[in-house]
Image 1 (cartoon, helix red, strand yellow):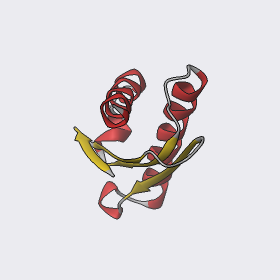
Image 2 (tube, one colour; image 1 turned 90 degrees about the vertical axis):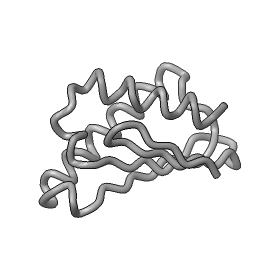
Image 3 (cartoon, one colour; image 1 turned 120 degrees about the horizontal axis):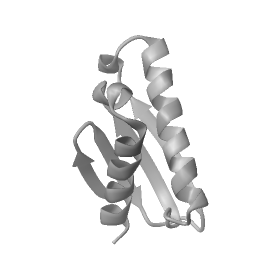
Image 4 (cartoon, helix red, strand yellow; image 1 turned 90 degrees about the horizontal axis):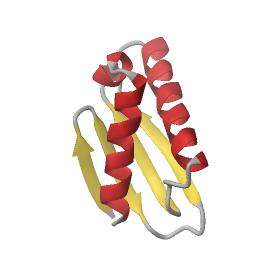
Length: 90
């Protein structure tokens, strides 16, 4: 299992699946349930775009995020997430 961190994002990757499987972990330190769910939705949208572009190799992913992920521009969030995935899957 590879554990990586880039800014407010973290990734754990296990290359054991035949397709991508993604789970999300946003701690209570990120704020209220509304804020945590909003972060989770932003992460899901970024992962969906990466998967549609073919940039998500098969495996099991655990994506974590801190409170800064809510205020970060979406393009920056997606870029950092893609960099983590590329580093983790290599």
